[in-house]
Length: 151
Image 1 (cartoon, one colour):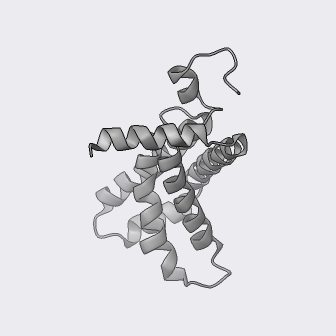
Image 2: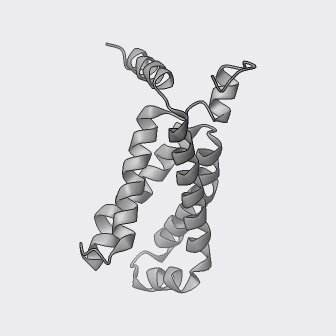
Image 3: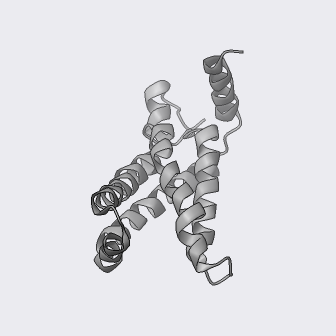
């Protein structure tokens, strides 16, 4: 089978079986990522410690800028439902790094809420990568400009 045909079929199925409350989960996820981006920018002490501990300071500086930019812009795009899948694809490496490399250093205890929130966000990103942005999104308005876009 052709990959584009499969993706089109999955997208059509997801559009037909997409409850509206899932759109609110997508919006909340986007807002959460945006807020995490703002928090990442505001925590300059953590950024400086990452720079000090890194062998490659320019690489860590680039990664810090990438994380902040992708969380801010990507979070807004996901919340609005505009090029949602593309925004999610830029978020995935950050969350995979957080789940596999950054947060496990603190342990798998229940007090490590950053690890658990990273895992939940990663699962939600994968879900919306497959599921799509839904009816309450700019993507839906662009694709199907109808009067009754809620129904």
